[in-house]
Amino acid sequence: MDRQKVTTRSIIEKKQQHIPITMLTAYDFPAAQMMDEVGIDIILVGDSLGMTVLGYETTLPVTMEDMLHHCKAVSRGAKNPLLVGDMPFMSYQVSVEEGVRNAGRFLQEAGMDAVKLEGGREKIEVIRKIVACGIPVMGHIGLTPQSVHQLGGFRTQGKTANAAMKLIQDALALEQAGIFALVLESIPEKLGRLISERLVIPTIGIGAGGGCDGQVLVIHDVLGLYDQFKPKFARQYANLRKVMVDAITSYKEEVISGTFPSNEHVYPINDQEWEKLIRLLEEAE
Image (cartoon, rainbow, N blue to C red; front, side, top):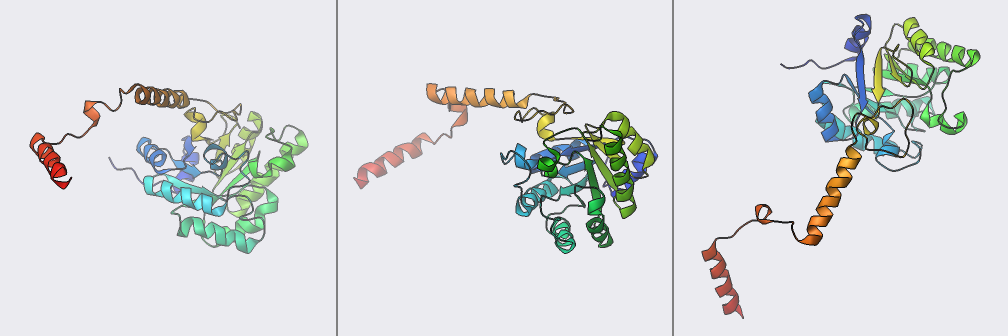
C-alpha cells in the first residue's frame, strides 16, 4: 500500500490526534531509503553530520556546501518522509537576507521540504522572513549545539525557574513567528511536557522526555556507530560498530591467509579460449 507524503500539515494533525511523531537524522542515500521503507515521519539532515560523519569535535565547522551535499543524497533516497535540512552555523546569523537565501537553497537545490534553525526570540526576524517566503521552518531551543561555547558545553538547559521561563517565552514567540514544529533538546522532562501542552504546533523531543509530541535521535546513536560522545538521552538499539569492525577484521585475516578470494568470488574463462590466449602470447614473443 502506497503511503502518502508527510507534510507540515499532517505533522500538526498528528499532534491534534495524539499520534506520536517519529523523527531520525539521516545523511546518505541508504539510510534515507531504509527510513522511508520503515515509515519514519520526518528525516532531519542534521548538522550533527559534522561530528558523526565528518569527524569534527562540534557542529560549528559544517558549511552550507556540506549540508547541501548530504541533503541531495537523502532526498534521492526518501520520498515519503518530511525532509528537513539543518541550517549550519553562520548560514543565518549574519543577516536576514543571507538567512533567507540559504534557506531557499535547501529547497531549490537540495530537495528539502523545510529547514531547521536554532535559537529563541533573537531569531524571530529571520524566521518570519523565511516563513513569509513560503519556506517551512522548524525551530530548536534548549541545548543548541551551535551555541555550545556560549552555553559552556553540552549542558542541560532550563533547570532553574528563570531559565525555564525564558524557554517557555521563546517557544511561544517562535510559534507566533510561524514555525510548524519545535525541537526541544536536553531540558527537564516536566518542562518539555509543559511547553508541549502550551503550544498548538508539535514538539519533537531529544532529551526532553515523553511529554513531547514526538521524538528524534541521531541515527549513529541508534545504530551504535558513533562512540565519541554518548549523551544520556541517546538509546542504542544495535551495536553495528562492533559488527562492522568484526567484518573488517575477518576480511583482513582472509586476505592475509589467502582464503579470500575463493573460487566462488572469481570469474572463469573457457579452457579453449585460455589455450588460444597462451598460443597468441607465444606467437607474439
